[in-house]
Every structure is written in C-alpha cells, then in structure tokens.
Image (cartoon, rainbow, N blue to C red; front, side):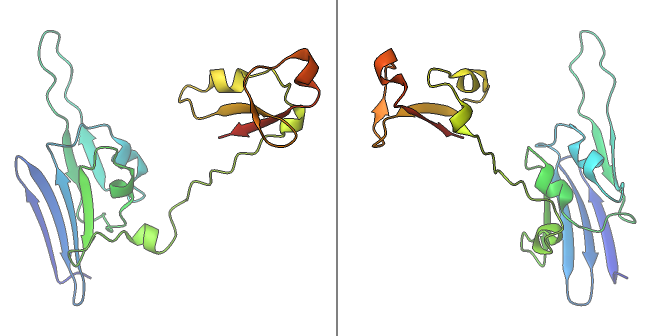
Length: 166
C-alpha cells in the first residue's frame, strides 16, 4: 500500500502520484498535448482511464475531451505512456522515465520478420512495390554476379534474379 497518494488536476496537467517507502511513482498528463484519441483508455488493463468527449455542435469549435485517471485503479504500468501517439502521458519512477511493462518484458514486441520467396516472383513484376502505401518495399533485379539491372530485356530475363527489400 502506498504511504501517500495524490492527484492534482489543473487546466494544463493531470498528475497522479504514489509515494512508497523506496519508490515514488508519478503519472503526468499534459492536457495541451492530449487530443482525446482514447488509445490510452482502450489499452489500460485496469480501466483506470476515462475519457469524456464533448458533443460536436454544428458551427462551433470542438471542445477538448475531458480525461480522468482513477488513482485507486492505476498501477503505473506505463502502457498508456508507450501507446500515446502524442507523447501526452509520462510515467516516471523516482523521477526516471522507467516503464515497468517494458522493464519486465511483459509488453508485446513487434517482430518485423517478413520473408518473400523471390523464386516465385516474375522478373518484371513490381506489384508489391506499387501497392505499398508507405513505399517500404523496393524491388530490384540483379544479374548472377549481383549487379543491378535497370531495364529487363527478353534476352537477359532468364538469367536475372529478383531481390526484395522490406
């Protein structure tokens, strides 16, 4: 049990703090950076985050969503910090930006291991390169000795290899 718990809510920030014998946990939300996207609330395993969006009224500027953290539910795991695309949430332990879910390796890691069997790729095909909306795929044609070929001719076609970089 924490020795002291505090929750401070101002116009610019919301801060939760747990003070234990040895450690001091702090969660700080910068309300200027938060856009109310609700990613943190959806990901919170303790359901400690509540976001109340304001209704959209025709012709009026949209008011910022109201966000609240339940100090009795939050365990300062840091999932909200990791997932916030705007950097609005920071979780610290003893003043250091340490996230327990990362430290304990309990947060899933993205494994980027995409393999393409290029032996099945036609030499003149670049469909995957064209289809990628982020331009992350590059198709190149190589000679047997590894030189890049810009133009594919019928004569060279049989001897070429396809290389795909992702």
